[in-house]
Structure formats: structure tokens, C-alpha cells
Amino acid sequence: MHTIMGTFILLFHINLANSNRVYVHPFKLFSLGNISCENPGLQNKMLPDNNLVVPNPITFPHNVTEEAGQPQKDTEVSGQNLTQNSVLAGLQNELGLRMYHEFRKQNASGNILLSPINIFGTLVTLYLGAAKQTAADLQRLIGIVEETGNENCTSPIDGHKILHALQTINAPVGESSDELSTAAWLFLNKGIHLQKSFVDGTHDFADNTYLKEVDFSDPLSAEKFVNSFVEVTSSQKVKGLFKGIDQTTDLLFASNFHLKGRWGKGFDIHQTKIQEFSPTDKSSILIPLMSQTGNFYYINDKMHHCSVVKLPLNNNSFLMLIYPNNDKDLFHIENHLKTHVIYNWQKYSKKRCLTISLPKFSMTATSDLKEILKKMKLPQLIDKNADFTRLSNKENLTVDKVLNTVVFEVSEQGSQEQDNCQDNSYAPFQMKIDKPFLFIVVENLSNAILMLGRITHPEYH
Image (cartoon, rainbow, N blue to C red; front, side):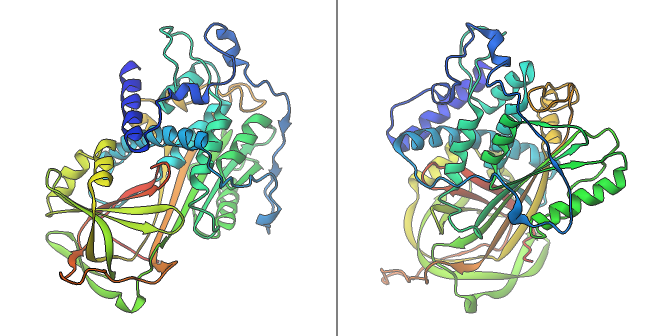
């Protein structure tokens, strides 16, 4: 644990190099009042709440606007909030990259897409319903732990405060609801009621939260109903999500993070041409490549054998493209993909006149958080023996599935027209993304990674 925390603290110092703020230990920002290891029995009784929320059954047709209790996004970020957000950005970035490397082990050559901020928020939401050792283990994975020297006691953190901070990170990016939207679905077996504190956390976590009662005694019918409901409430973006439901199911948890990337300066649709893209050195496909010329932050990283360019997105975020210098370098880049490497790309990039050509693409990916944790040798966090007694009225409740779905779309659309380079004394540098590459979507104020992934076979739907 000390090694993990040392990594997190080092990461926070790296973030501070960009912000010049005084270092504050993460636990000091998100501790839960006066509850401490001096009173270890209290950590399993924190925020006592006997109010139970009874989920409604699924009905069709469903009116999405009828869902109640959705949070209003807080777009104001004070100095204190910025410090909190930067701390969380460092923690969730580190955890997101750890999980990305687990994805690579299972998917050596295909497309990869995940949202570190969405996964981090899922873990914090589950923490609100966890108790005893499960709560302590989740807290260590989240990375906000007070070092007391007492391994038998972990001082609790305020999960609601963390989720609210994550919400303020997302808020500037998603000022327009068609650019960034988040949703959470919880399907519970008949008779299971949720603790209000946990339900409040799900509303902090997502723009839209759906709590539904399901009769799992008929698994095939239940699976059909659940998947149809998710499809309707996700505007048909998420289909056939749950598989393998059985009669013993207690709780299904799913979330969706949908980002429609609108450029700060849009691409001219007339410049989009069908061109070759080479998934491997022995194959090629025809896809639409968008092109524009302008001043962009760029770096040629010779140590990691890649070129990196930052393309501004609308509303306070940017897309970082990482393009290998040759076909064999992508594996090398991924092996060295660390938070300090990403930070250095941002720090040392310089504005340059570029003509950038990149694929027009859309991606959808679903990750099974229970399987990821199992690969990370942390299966006890959400397995059948995990303690979620603070989540519902059922003793020994099992969280059966935890799925995270991410949707990312990129087209020519932007908020402003293209601008040509001001310095016409040199021809623009040509950067053509026509083979597999990596990308990272970053929120400007906190440097939080919203999405990251690998594209080997671009598609657009």
C-alpha cells in the first residue's frame, strides 16, 4: 500500500508542477469529518441512513424526462475546487492507465476505448455502499488513504464530495447536452430497496440515473426487458448490454459515458476524402480522412518514437493524437504510456503550422469492471463475498455485474471555422494519420483524462 500511495503522491507533485499550488494530501481534501482510526468502529457506521428508496418496475413506453432527482451540473470551479479536481485527476489518470494496460493484455491488436473518469466514478459510487474490508479495499484502489501505520483501520472518505468534484470536471466539457452525457442504470431483484445515501451518490455520479425493479425469476424475459430499457434510455446508443442473467441476480449496475467530439475549429467537410488506412503493414482499408491546416501544439518525441499533436475540442477539452513513427513503434509507445510521459508531451509541445489528416470515426466499447479487477488480482472488491451492507436492505447482497459503456464520436463539426497559419514563409508540415494510433481526451483545467484508446480499424456510423 505504501508503494501505491508513493506513486500517487509523486503523481500529484507532477500535476503541481503545472499549477504551482501548495501540496495538500488527497486525504485532507476528501476525509469524512472527524471519523478516524481513533474510533475504528465508526467507519462502518458513517453517514447512518435508515431511509430506503423503493425502485419502480420497468414500464414501456418510457418517458426519459420523467426520471426524478437528477443533479444540476455545477460549472463554477473555485480555487478550492480546482485543487480538488487536480488531485482527483492525478489519481484517476494513474488508475485509468493501469487498467488500459490490462485491456492491452486481452486485446493485443484491436480497437480499445475506456473512460478513466467513468471507471473511477463507478468505484467511488460502489464505495458508498461498501462496508468493512470491502470499503477499505475500494478506498485503497481509489488512492485516497491516510497513512496511520494501523493496517487494521482505514479512515473513511466522503464519496459524495469526490463524485461532486468529478461532476465539476465533466461540467465545462458537457455544457451542451449533445456533447457529453452520462447515465447510470441499476436493476434490482424484487424486494431489494436501496439506502438513500447510495442512491444520492448515483445521482452525483451521472446526469441521468435509472433505478428499476426486475423479476429475475424468469431470466430470459428479465434480460430482454432490461436491455430494451437501456436501449430506449440511451437513445439507442447502447444495445444488448447484459448477457447471462440468472435467477439468483441481486443487482446489475451499468453506466454510459457518451462524448461527441466537436472541434474548437471545425474541419471543412469538402476536404474529407476517401483514402487508404493501413491496420497492419500487410493490409489496407478505405476510410474517410478529414483534413485541415492550422497552428497546433506538436512534438516529435524521439525517445518514444512518436509524434504528438493537440487538437482543441469545444468547451474546455482537447484531443491528443499519438502517432508512431513506424509500424512497429505502437507497441513501444504503449509500453511506456505513463502519466509523466503524457505530462511531458503537453509541457514541451510547441505551436507549429500543420496540415493534419485524420480518420473520421465513432467508437463504442463496453468493459466488465469485475473482470478487469480479477485480471488486476483484485477480485474480492466486487465478488460474491464483498460486503455491500450499506447499499441496500438485503444482507449479503451480491453486485452481479458492473459494466461501463463508452461512446465516442468524431466528425468534421466544430464551433468555429478553420484558420490558416499566420506564418506563410514555410509550407505547412504534413501529418497524415493513416495507420494505427493512440488518442487521449483531456479536460483542460484539471488535466483529467476523460477517454483514452487505440484505433487500429477506424469506423464511422
